[in-house]
Image (cartoon, rainbow, N blue to C red; front, side):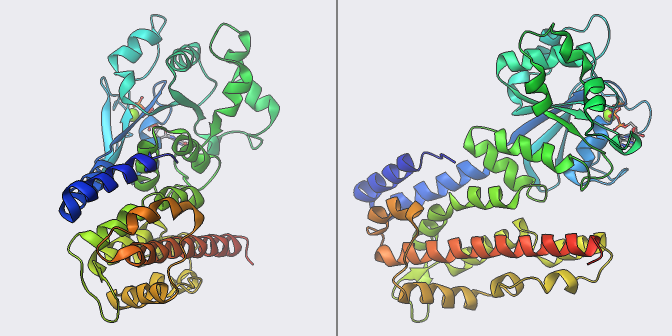
Length: 389
Ligand SMILES: Nc1nc2c(ncn2[C@@H]2O[C@H](COP(=O)(O)OP(=O)(O)OP(=O)(O)O)[C@@H](O)[C@H]2O)c(=O)[nH]1
Ligand SMILES: [Mg+2]
């Protein structure tokens, strides 16, 4: 991901030479709030009663009837876009758009009315075959350069061979007649997914959300989508996105409220690092609430999954462990990996010198890698249990 790292390092170096540490401190705070304040809007549209609300509820992890959930009963159609986000997690907002239908449908007018520019991407839903209106809308979206996906819902009620050519041909028949100048069948097939809105863990549900995450831009929007929908994200992509921000976190620990730490030759904000690593635990679903929720899915006690965790800090996180780990990297002279080398000239100008920033980078980078491995071990364990191994 390109977050204009060279630009950030340049700004940090300028701040250090002109205003010293206090100017770097304000800049690092500003960079973090720039990242944290990003909000991504995603549109969900389609014919009436195809599962737009149920799809949003599944993405958000809402149960039917829950306060924040989209209503799915009869006569609940929206007449203007309705926004849904997870409480306490406003960085991704899913919008249920008014249904597309009727002989007088104009994709141009529709997209203007719903403010097309606002959304990073569109999910176009159908519970049978795609209609002319859906295809016209997609054609217009392609023309204006918006990503979109065709989602065939209610696949749990459908024929068993949902990947069969005949089934796909029928569902996508409207695109083969060739009236849509911006669409060809290869493109449409590559953006076609089959889901059940009641089973986020089955069929193509994860794949369609991951396609949206992977293809979103600019990079900060992609990052916000990966983080806010971390429970659906591909863990490797989540890790890669988080890695980009490690140097910022390391500088933060070195310049914002650092305190002396036993045996360390520099100061660090261990409390901040604790929060950061705790966030990694949550993102990779290694915290107790996530483990127990997933254990329930496979009808097992939580320890069946928690026993798969090999990283000490993923099991029990304390500020003491963090200080010891930092010291370990400092004693090893903090060999940062190739991707962080460009930060070194700036890290050398920190009050604690290169070792302070570089050791913190090593600490966070290793935790991220080890937590990813733990997350995959848990995933494998769940699959094994489900296969009855
Ligand atoms: N079996 C099954 N039922 C679904 C699926 N998606 C939605 N439903 C059901 O279909 C009905 C309509 O779902 P909604 O989510 O309200 O559909 P909608 O497109 O938001 O409907 P309107 O807003 O009224 O146009 C509800 O009874 C859902 O429970 C699915 O994937 N599988
Ligand atoms: Mg609805």
